[in-house]
Length: 457
Length: 119
Image (cartoon, rainbow over all chains, first blue to last red; front, side, top):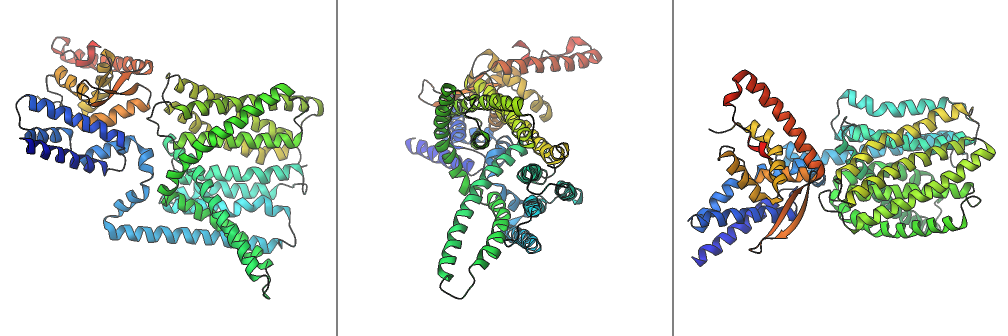
């Protein structure tokens, strides 16, 4: 009898590891399923069955493992996300098909990266950069690169022709506006357009990224993850590229080779191509970053929280009125965007089904501190506008701060409710995903409406 | 009599919520309660209960807590939330409408009481 017990223990362990092979079944779920199986076995044995018989019936009642793991995958799409490559591989059928799919994916990514690099080089030659630096180059820079990311995503998502048109239309429209508007050279509106059009362009990628379903909240959350991981990957590539550039320059300096060629040809092409490559890496090498991302947010969220608290307390005491000059306002806007990004990314990297923990409390404190700072900035800004009137920069800054204020307030509210156990984590995610279009709309207003209102000064 | 698969699936959420409205419970006990309530006529695949429970958790309809059973087995207990009770009330209204409609044409007398009605 004892050996029979042992055998059943082995069977249970084997069943557990079989279930564990499903991509979306996590460790705690296995514990839960195993506890269920053991309860069932215990009950069946209680009614007189032998251990092995009880095991067989319990497993049968549990259902087919592939069906269970399929059902788990439908519920936990976030966990499945890291398996996207494997899943498309399955669709192709067989390992040969998978290999072809990978070769195709690599080929497509490289082709689009080269396309972006060529586009940037052509523009650079036309502009005569770096000898000459016309401002249209800065306005158009993101429009030269991001359409290639959109195109690559459209290929990857196998969008139909209509999907292609929708993916690329925003860039065509943006190009028309950016180049038809009669900007004063080096004026405030021109700089605002140059800084805001990349935001519009990036958010326009959502259409292709979501496979033509930009309204889906799940896809939008994936897009947020995609954005955060893109930033990490792009930074890593940039650091590596920087080291490569520096060494190349140093090595070639004593020779007859003109070193400035490196910064003219390699640097812009590399920076443009790396955008597509980073997007591709995020999509296909998901696992590598997924292990790193939660660690990074866990590390930096508390640090930023402390910094925000110190800043909020300091400004509350010194009084913000005269301290907020123009440069400092820019710094605060950047800080707010970084905090929001950190919170957003922390939310997207978090396993939604776990209970509120210390990291959620820290996040709440960070958001509240940012909210307090944002209110002070807004008050200072309102006073400034009251004294000196509206300028394009003040309108853009005021709008951005209001957009951030509403988002932070909503975020604080839903995190607070979640931490208090009054609502689920899904509400926080839903608030953020529902808010994404607001950022796009505001950036688009700065690009399209603000220059016209201020007569392109 | 075996109840149709689609019907089982459609009634699963209100049934689970109603059972949890009685008191907090864990997966295996919830399934036993389903069998008991339906007299064994609602055949669930045990493993399918858990993705459903996890969905309810994600929606904030239930909260969870790991506890040790008297036999020392770790179990994940599910408890209904205020949101969950609201969802359950909504489900009840919908099912009442369905049973009213069916009862209207079949004659109310022989409509069996719905298992989850007693929450």
